[in-house]
Image (tube, rainbow, N blue to C red; front, side, top):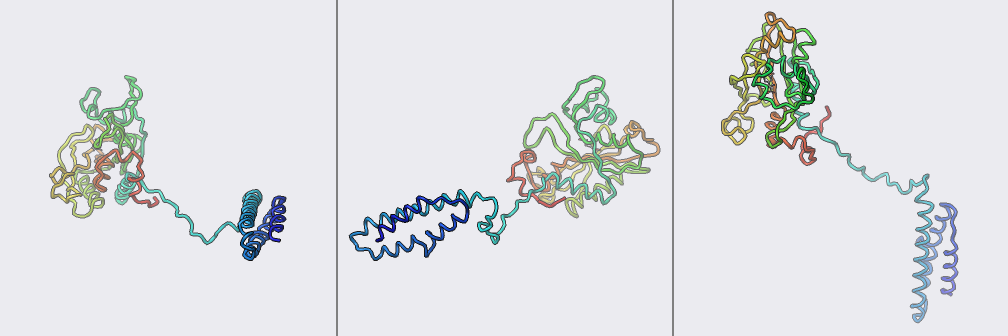
Length: 345
Ligand code: DAH
């Protein structure tokens, strides 16, 4: 009895030739559900005399496997590949996969913060080209042709035309010149950008880095204005109570010139590895714009005076985030980058 049923169904299953989803589903309902044929045959199998069990059990299992594989095959052909109604496979209650937010590059964060502080003092943002001519990068800034000051900055030249060599700018001070040439005082601007120098790459030097230049030109601008502006900036960026000190220095385009140190933001002036136990770290160069530079840019140096300053963004980021190796900024290592804010600007 059971044996003939098994044979009958085996043939039926072998002959199964579905032509649509519905046929497949009907097959499943007929053979494979809890009250379907396969289960029923297994129920019947329980009453079979034990001497027949071996043979019939084998046949019954084969039938079951055949039914399952026939169904799977038919399902793949019709149901899974149907481009229409497969909603029954979509579990809308599953929690959504989290979206990974990118993070801001630390240099972008610092640049934004610097710009924000100076914006409160009325400074606007201005930018200039990274490929620069000799005039804007050097000559207008009082670097005479053979002056040793040109050696202070190892330059990547693009064209070595004797008359007007073209180079990757070595500092953002070139943007000061462009700004003063193009407009009329007063100027109050902050100029962020990338600069290039022909240096071997190491933890402490790179062939490109970022600077922010500042320029303030108006009637009766004095060194006191310079000091007050930079003092305010430092309190905002590194916190109230940060001390500043100015050391006399030399830049061809400012007179007098100074370098500004702040009390070490890491050890608060007590002395640590970063400040080489001195308690102070240098953060920028500054000075009163040399009257000759004003004249070079078409500004009457009798009527106007100004101050300028320039700082490295990497340097500030090093201090703020205690980053010791400059190379991290340009290696695009996500383990490093993902530690910073993902705030939207
Ligand atoms: N351009 C200088 C440098 O790259 C930095 C600098 C110093 C900029 C003094 C200034 C300044 O505007 O007044 O080393």
